[in-house]
Length: 257
Image 1 (cartoon, rainbow, N blue to C red):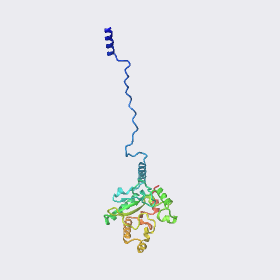
Image 2 (cartoon, helix red, strand yellow):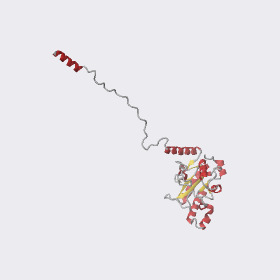
Image 3 (cartoon, one colour):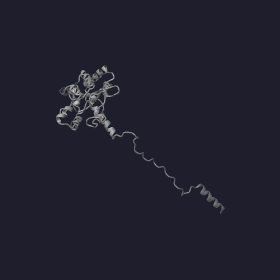
Image 4 (cartoon, rainbow, N blue to C red):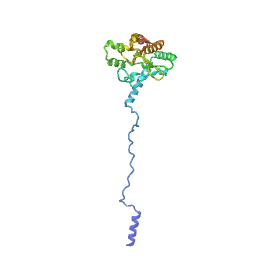
């Protein structure tokens, strides 16, 4: 009896029990979660990326059309495209992230010359560009938005049916700023629609005290450097300068859609 008990004890000691709980099998790794964007990263369909893409597409199309970025020729010319802000007569941004000054090559060279003439006379002044090439679709938007009778509207904006010299990259809107980036006083803001902005009325406006002598001298300085560089002004906007006639632009250039 004693021997049987000892044998049973030894059997239990060296043989594993059949009812032992089965050890859990290792599980395959769970699939990795999809990539999570980093905080602050821009996703492909985000508004910022869409705007950047639109701006770069417009710039590529302008370069393909043979236009040049003026700041590549003279980085001292200041660019402040007002239609890329809400500070314009429309009251909203129509250019998005597009904020560069593109012009036809010969027109850009004229602007560089005007800057050189200004700097030679007043080294602490600089030209500031408020608008340069303007796609025709933007011209249509402006025309439809400007609430003036047709006869008055054409004083300040070219009918898109005819095309503006801006649409060819052959016109530029400019002012002058000082060494502190403060615009000189020209008597009105840029894009002011009214006779206070009319060069043709300046002598009368001066006599009536509606513009000052200093404001007139600032306008004359701007016209002087722009005309010597090959531009011509118009009678209703002190800031607008053409590099050629509309007929010449149609012969030389293609309109920018």
